[in-house]
Image (cartoon, rainbow, N blue to C red; front, side, top):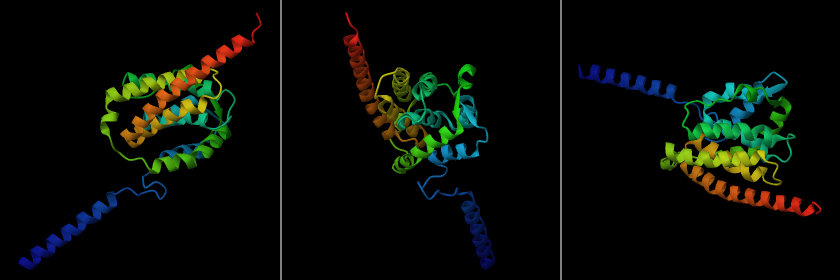
Length: 231
């Protein structure tokens, strides 16, 4: 009886271990995480069949991923030197709208239909994401869940308010500020995706510095134009 009982317990334990192993998700070789941000964005461009990708298409395909991935996606083109004409205006407005929704703690992201019809060529999307993906992958390797206090609703709303200001500055034709303004937004998006409060803190600090820089650059540009106008 004792031997039979021991054997049954051993078989039951083996079955539990087998089920546990099957439930564990596979780990990606690159970042140690499953389905990284860079993989998602690259995969979307590879799977898309139409020649044009509208902002509405992007929202519909990626909204279930939450605000973080959308902030990254719409801010990334500003990190690539001159990828698409007028890129700051194209993506700055949806970034502002998404930032407002985070401030208001809306459960799901959305864009108005008139904005959703605007788009870019699939080749341009693939070019931008392809150039940004290696750097994005390197950054993802050092991110991990930490400092949860920086991802509380109130703190997130405050940082999103800063992202709103940065997004509106992106829309303005201020020279040499696109990359500076976009970096904090990308970092905040990564913080939301990876639940990294330290990344959110860095995004907030860099965001304040970027805002001061952009305002100063804009004021200098206005003074330069005023000085060049005769009379």
